[in-house]
Amino acid sequence: MHFQEILERKRDGKSLTKEEIQFFVKAYTKDNIPDYQASAFLMASYLNGLTIDETVWLTEAMLHSGIVVDLKSVPGIKVDKHSTGGVGDKTSLIIAPICAALGVPVPMISGRGLGHTGGTLDKLESIPGFNVNLGLDAYQRLVRDYGICLIGQTQEIAPADKKLYALRDVTCTVENKSLISASIMSKKLAEGIDALVLDVKTGCGAFMKTEQDSEELARLMMSIGHKMGKKVTALITDMNQTLGSYVGNALEVIESVDILKGQALPEQKDLVDLSILLSAHMIILGGLTEDLDEAKSMAMKSIEDGSAFLKFKQIVEQQGGDASALDNYSKLPTAGEKHLMKADSSGYIKSLNALTIGKGAVYLGAGRIALDSIIDPAVGLIVKKKVGDRVKAGETILEIRFNDESKLNDALPYFNKSIEITSEKTAPLTLIKKTILGEI
Ligand code: URA
Image 1 (spheres, protein in one colour):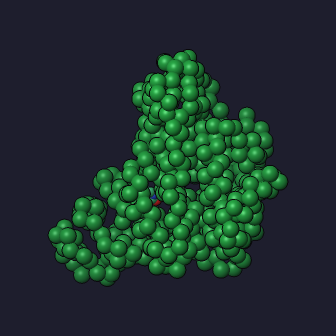
Image 2 (cartoon, helix red, strand yellow):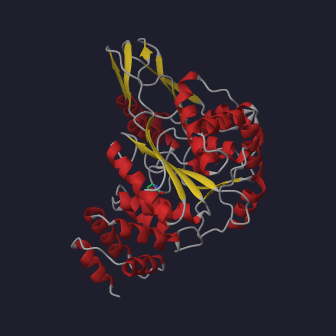
Image 3 (spheres, protein in one colour):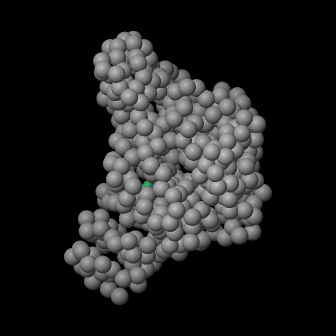
């Protein structure tokens, strides 16, 4: 097969065969196709689109570019959750221990922060000693013995995605539904799951800005999962404002732990509600009940009786982390300085733009500006008000925690831009836009 002929056909908007897509993925993974030709392939796919069949074949080829973990020796229905990425989105840290505590095994292979969005691995690594780079043997053992393991993509998991994702990042070919679906689903299907809950974000802080695009992405990922014999549920959820109130790696660990301890503040209600709902759908897919209200009560109970927090402590210890830091937050990285951003007028919060808040957090040091940037786990911000809240002139809206004054100065214009106050009453944002269940 000649790759140039495949490229030509994709450039002209023709559909490719399964064999042609397999050829591309295999050859590129083995370095037999250079980056410049792969970039042309990605751009042609981005501009002309891939059919559903092409998307499924691409996913399969990427999935089989590495190992598909076999977790059959672990009893129970293994369920994971994947979020398409947001700001302040730390639900993985909350729902994985909730479900594991209830007996639903959660094999979770997560990512790092991407662009303005945060990543589970960066958050976990802010716990001193926590090792996200365990091999697949340890991963299988922890899922079997503790019902949970939280690691990063290893060399063996969908290596084609690892290579292609890095290329997409620098060739502006990330935001395409087929390419996103194949990337996410190839990694998730390689984990050894039986079922998956997707949290597809929508709004200014998400990769998909409109509900229609988010729903199309959700349905595409669901149909890929179903074709591969997995049960998949998708929620479309708001990402116009930050989720919960803390943004930044160690701060997000603190907020998650507070919630696991049952100590949520009123402004964290959205995070609690979404975590309980996502857990409930995982509990249903995990076969513990068919009733959503009962599943939600089970999730709440695991917080009230302390079992979810205990499970989180257990996995932190098992992955080399200092679990005592979860009771004594001064052992977590802590920023030295605070800057308060106050309301310049009285009124109602109209917007707290998640995109500009996320970008500001990156410039503060919570995320990466370049691939090799070193993040500062201590920095971030606490969002004191949410859309729809009343605010008085001089009241704090954002409490920024920083270590480096010049980084604060880089970040402040973004934080300033994110806040809009109006004199007219505004409505709180709707968090859960849609739930998509069953076969697609
Ligand atoms: N997350 C992924 O893993 N892949 C994408 O393409 C986008 C978000």
